[in-house]
Image (cartoon, rainbow, N blue to C red):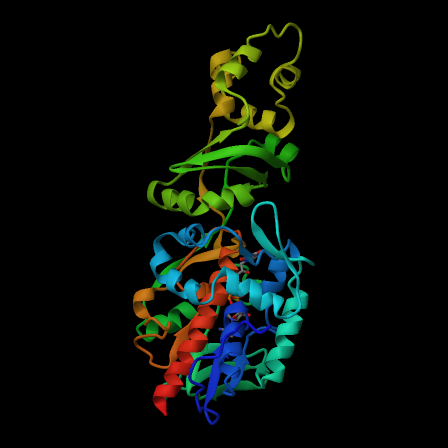
Length: 417
Ligand SMILES: Cc1cc2nc3c(=O)[nH]c(=O)nc-3n(C[C@H](O)[C@H](O)[C@H](O)COP(=O)(O)OP(=O)(O)OC[C@H]3O[C@@H](n4cnc5c(N)ncnc54)[C@H](O)[C@@H]3O)c2cc1C
């Protein structure tokens, strides 16, 4: 099955050529949509191979999309829902699933509702996709780094053979965000787009870890340890899950889920305090009752473990943030177990984040994702100004915006005839 639908009116643009810069999921999707109409497409990428971040995403299990109802799905894009929702209505989670299955790749829905390919990896999908693009005549130009536009509006590239200047009928920029720059997306494009009048919100870490000032003892003892089955509260958000203690602080899915809110609070106020419920299945009264049993000669560690089942890294966390006095006060200790306050001081650097917030603002784009100041130039993927939590929402929006940009190019070429 081929789920990428062809536009209703096939265009006669065989003599046109389209340049896609950036061979991630967004750029490759745009290349597929355009080349499927017989239009010549050239994909340029600065790296020696395409799809490196996509492959990296597959290392820990490629979470393609999410199976929750569409209404809930679109709410994940927060403030940018209004801009992303119309695109997802055309190519959203269901179309993405069909498209993946169209390569003969089976998918499954995990217990959390997240959708994965059965093999969990990205490589079989990428291989099959590149083969399809090859058959459609798409040409790849690797180790070609784009450096903006020349005065005559040609695209400027540095290549192993020196500088190259390329003129083309339409361009899709799908250059990614600014995280994990070693995989190709380094955010260097921001300046070049601003120079041509696009409004770009500064790139910020999203789905990122945070710095915490650990004591040397805690850091040495618990770096790399997971904190499982806790409830994190921050502002309106209250979510159960797990995260990891790092050398610098905290990271992992539960932290990422709250990371946009935490980051913005740190930017506004200098720090953010999260609350952890270390024993979400037990009430405050239950804890107070258990802790009121006499400790006798037992150490505090063994007492905590025997009475309320708190040990290891969770006990270590209590030690980090509960004063000596409160530790010996049953009520206060019970309270701290249900509401342990941890100050987060700074987001980890953008390069370490799973994704970027910020990017090309939607007000600089028309509804086909074409730059208002540069007719014929379209933008797609993570370089646009939206963010979403992990859970498959990132890739879905990248595919969806790539699909929209591809169709925008076809409409643009049609009007240029
Ligand atoms: C560790 C990790 C795990 C992840 N897991 C998931 C997951 O399971 N599910 C999910 O939904 N998302 C996941 N993501 C996020 C997802 O991979 C990205 O959101 C997605 O790859 C972005 O797609 P894109 O096409 O916009 O950009 P990218 O995939 O970043 O591709 C951009 C391309 O542009 C090229 N490029 C950049 N600048 C230039 C230039 N100047 N000249 C030429 N080429 C250039 C780059 O080399 C790159 O190939 C993960 C990310 C990371 C880091």
